[in-house]
Length: 210
Image 1 (cartoon, rainbow, N blue to C red):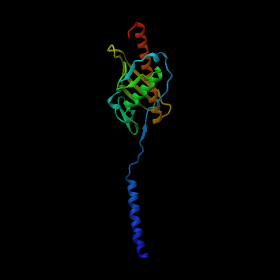
Image 2 (cartoon, helix red, strand yellow):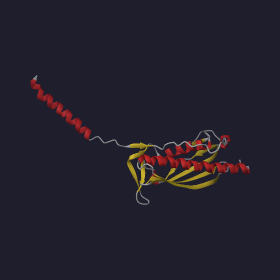
Image 3 (spheres, rainbow, N blue to C red):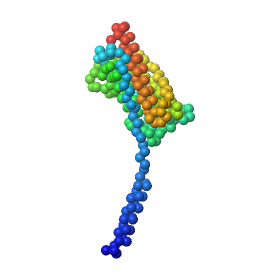
Image 4 (cartoon, rainbow, N blue to C red):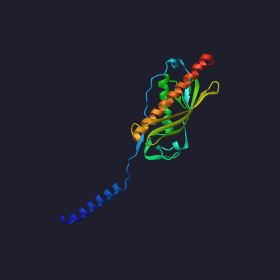
């Protein structure tokens, strides 16, 4: 029996060495996924509850540098760096779209808001287009710049086209703080869009344009 001990020890030594080496070559999985946090907002008015027309948000358009999965950080003016370890949990255009729709439902107190392509059947009245041109941080602030367009589908007219730009001071100087500010930025963008929709609808109602 003792004659086999050296071979047995040698066998286990080889297995242990292979196990340790396999661990050394495994990549470290230190990637963190982030998503925009929903921010519930009180309804601006109850009057939209009586509006049966559908509001449709078209696919959000991203500037070229925003189409990467990593969170963006500004360096020199006009230059950004994309994080390789802190990524959006899904395509940024879809994350922004989901939060805008949720925000408009809260603010207008209606379920008649949908992202493209929307329901198969519905009386579509208003269409929203959003172009996201900046959505990044530096060491002090988070910045958003977006252009939104509101159209009346029935009359085939554009009644609002505005640029939305805000900066938010970081309360937390880490990736979570940047995502918190990004979530607030989309909530504020949703509120401005809702106010523009309300103003346009009130004007159409007053002038009798249905």
